[in-house]
Image (cartoon, rainbow, N blue to C red):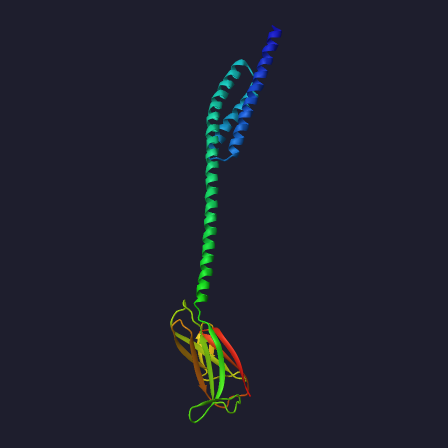
Length: 261
């Protein structure tokens, strides 16, 4: 009888240890599932608490046949619930993985679309600047000449300052098929050797920029090459270096120097 009792006791101890191992394995499964954070965290935490409670009860029990059987029944019930929850958790994890992949693919596609749009915008801006630049009418062959006007009205070229009473400024507008046709207005600025603007000495404001000019010339441009010429009448012109500037609004489009002796 003593031998049978020892065998029974050993068997019960073994079964108790086996049950505890199963319970701890179940708890470990719950720990891993909770760490995945799939949206079932509350349910998983609640079921893990039941497993932990059962572990505590088994560890405190004396390990008799009746109590062990009761604990085994509780474990089987809890395991069924666990298997169901873990399966649902795995399904959610897989769905989340699919959604993440789809999101990443979408973000990649959006990134590529944005880069493509940015490239298009950059190309359009470059094209606009190119078209704007191409539409500018070039000012060529800028000349500045000095004359003495005779009583007959004839102009005689001279470089002697004391004889000069007429300055002539001329330039060519280049042909341009894409330029806007119609009236072209240019501001002509003639600066003498003493840094004074000769002529009308009027001012025009362009934003933060103020331009003092000698005169304005208007040309009816038709997209073809045309010559533009204007004169400034005056007297007592100073000797030295003169500068002629041609402005399209506030943009300098032509520059020339000449000297009066």
